[in-house]
Image 1 (cartoon, helix red, strand yellow):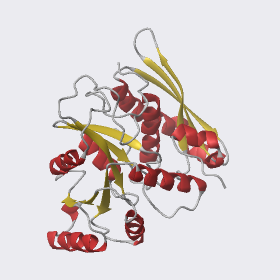
Image 2 (cartoon, one colour):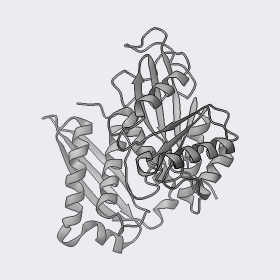
Image 3 (cartoon, helix red, strand yellow):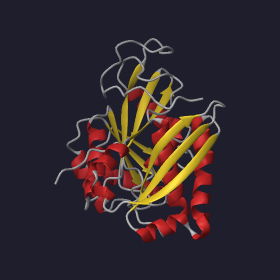
Image 4 (cartoon, rainbow, N blue to C red):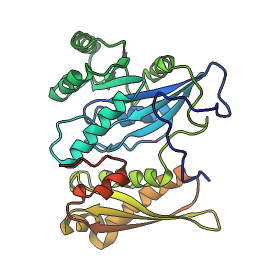
Length: 322
């Protein structure tokens, strides 16, 4: 069974003190940050590049909150992909923490990939990212996503306009959902990684502890089931992860909402909604844990949880003061 804990992440740009088993000669390793406006497709792209699910995907904007890292081997290169929260104009404390997390991921990376939804083109959010990206002194890659949904002429025009605003080292046109253009992008990112030993074991696909990934999976299922009904400010925490003698895992999680009316929505009539959320989450958590999972969900009202520093630590975010 996969271990619940993972080694602490090496600092970006710093080589590990000794080569890990499986590291080839002339190895390369580094960090590539994925940034962009909300719903540009960063989480879908991360999962596509890694080849398995390491970041939650939802139609609801701003579902990625903290930095999520996926690990890719391409030839002799190990690419640590950093999926950042969507960059937007922050209005609340949680928003500010997410935007700070996104830009910190970009500034620490060896390469920065700007992902743009080709259907939307350049809007105010993309313009704001471009303005700040000028100050990031890292190789910049432009990725136009969802290219299967617009004419090629418009794609070329969009790429030319973005490069005129801010020159990029390379431009890629992809469909993260369908996999078009992913292999070429992966090879290009591998070539940008600095020389050095791999930072993670060859078979590791993410640095997120399983208990954190389990909480994210359940949060995704909540969004899937209650996309329009449940407000954005809800969160999930894994309270207990107990490995039983038979190798199965007992997991207890708490879903925090801000009002009693929201708690009723999550529970559903006769508990039907919470059961369907739990069933969907259990299947995916079991795949990630490589074990039989017994999942128990609890829903609690915690007013103003988004102002609680402990909740930020649980999500891997820095708590903004003031």
